[in-house]
Image (cartoon, rainbow, N blue to C red):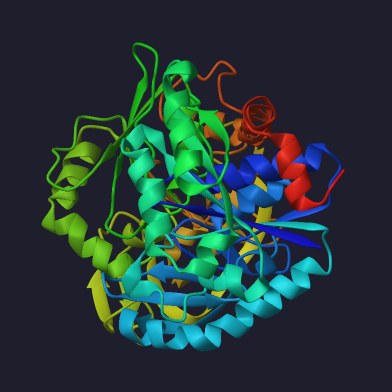
Length: 487
């Protein structure tokens, strides 16, 4: 068994993408490989084959390896609920809520969960490609570190350091990071990968030579800026979409605790959809559809919607014939009340919902973590079509609105549709991934789809192969194989 860790000079340096690229490249070589992220802080998550929850980017890396995601692949997942507190997921299951200071002290105990998960994964696969979090040079976070060099030291694995040249200052990033880590950590940092380069590589080569001479470490390669790359993000909200003239206008408010916004990637890729993410202090544009996304703090984000005038925007939007759709937390917001008596998402209390669906939601202990498959039933759809997705939520929803469900799960139902068909909601994340389901929803909202919906599962596979192609073309794969001890 061999473990290689990919660390970055900054957050969003491209660690997740590089790990996915290496995983797919090794998988195509016939290597038994699995991803591992000791600690992740993200609100995009996925349900695992063993009924747990891990970061969405790690689940994507599992797919790159040809594997089902497993809770061993991301033993610590932190899901922020406030600026200073998060829900702590250990080995796929909720451990509890902690503020930042308490979690910093708890990391010494979390280390054991990380070690056990890595050992379990290592017993099943020949190569582990591990991913760091943020930067190893965060001085204030080095005590009891389990996310970066603390993990690498614990399992005694080599490290490759990734720098993002598109941000600028990549040589300062790489050299500065080496200067701020310990001597033993520098010795296990075997080389560099420069990410997101665009331009003539000949102009960069003098800098690469200087970097190798200055640090005594090789630059393993320079990965290009891959235009149009759309893959499940760890946490950063994607850009708005490119689209054709006359596209269906879909607006999504960027909630402070927005979760699983990768739900919208199939809409971003659809040529007939103009998808717009609208943040704070931005005026919501006119739209055909408003979609309320998932949330890790439903009541808090509901307050944010009202503070930013979205309740009035939605009321006016519906009055003029627009459509509203809610996913998970967004679905809960569309009901009459959201109650959290035990403060599972923050301060205990009740909040009035937006009142557009006849439902009420109560937060209860015990998170629903389920992969589901069923049939979608939009008004006027004709024959039902298949829909698949996953549920990640604490709330239990009741009310007469559930008598008009959006999804039939074969004995159970999900979601609700208003009597006039303008307002709908569901607990299913990934509801747009299946092209037939996506087309049915878009058709209900007034877009003649004409087979343009993207098969997102196929798209993911194509993008992962694109990453592996870049590894083969741009990295020193012979050097990598020697480092990993594979033929």
